Every structure is written in C-alpha cells, then in structure tokens.
Length: 234
View 1: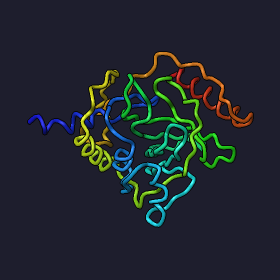
View 2: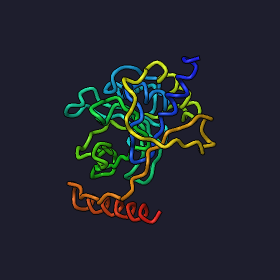
View 3: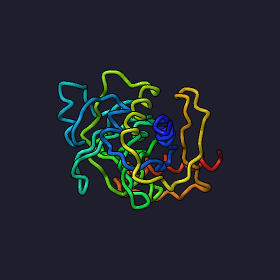
C-alpha cells in the first residue's frame, strides 16, 4: 500500500508556477527532460546535441515540447537540458528543468515555469539568462546554447506527467522540501492528481537593469516593467 502511494505523492510535487519554486530534490536534468519531451537520448547533457544529429530535427528557435540544450560553460562542465513549456514572445519563454538552482543548500530540485530570456544580439537564442530561484530574479550569468532539439511528436501533458511519475518513483528525494506550496486541483486538462504550485509573491520586486547592449537592455527592461505593472493590478 505504501508503495502504491509513492508515485501520486511524488508527481504532486512536480509543478510550480513562475517564479520557479523548488518542490522536489534528488533528480538530474537529463531524465527529467527526457520524460517531459519524449526525446530518447541518454548520456550527459553536453552530448545530446551531437547525439540528436540524424535522429531529431535541431534548430535555433524554441518550440513547445522541445529540448533546450545548453553548452558546457564555467562550472557547468556537463552542460544542461531543459524542456520548453511555453513561448511568450520572441525573447521570452518558460521552461521546466531539474538540478539547476541551489536551494536550501541542495541541488536536484525540479523547477517549473522558469523564465528564460534570450540575450543574444541577433535574437538567435545563442545566449540566455535563466531565472534563479534563490535570488528571486534572473540569474546574472549569460549561458550559451547549442539550440533546440525537436521531438518527432510533441508529448501530450498526460503522457509527459506519467513518464515523469515513473522517473520520480525510481528517484526518491534526498529529503523533503522545506519550500511551502499551495495545492492546486483545478487543472482539468492535466491528469487527475494534485499539483503543487508556488505561492505568489506579496509584492512585486523592483526590476534591476541588465548588463546588455543598450538596445536590448531597453527592450527587456521595458517588458519587465510592463509585466510588473500587470502583476500589481492583478
């Protein structure tokens, strides 16, 4: 009986609203991205781009359901992969990924609806900045991308969540997350399980300027100000 409750309990921790909130620990980025996208590539994240050649279409434009493939950079020697969940505009999208932020001194968290901004001069998604949960803001690093790996068919949400539940059942958390969550059951388009969503911040944080080129800096900062204004009205 105890074993039968494990998968529903773990999958209930797999969804968080933006800004990203950590609700699970102990998972690497590779099995998480594979489960959500259905791109069946194995091995370290930095090998996915070359492995995809001849097996999957690749490109420099984000699509829902695609794998975002990061190049090794700095201390991230093994690269990183994430699943594209929503394309907001030509420079903004939301991803879901695992093992990115260090929260409560721990790695391996699942973070969903994570904001990513394209900061490349040519809007070709060759360099991005990623929301960093501990700072409740976009991270200061610019991360180079290989690009996007497109699955043969976009995995449906129910199928993706079932695959993720199977992965989580084999990867028990290292310890329960201390982050608070609000259980949201009103998601009819998803499987009939409870998903956890992050509590919304009480006040909108002031937007800090980005150290980018002048034109791109203005464009992104203006978009952020408009978003913060909408958040205050809602």
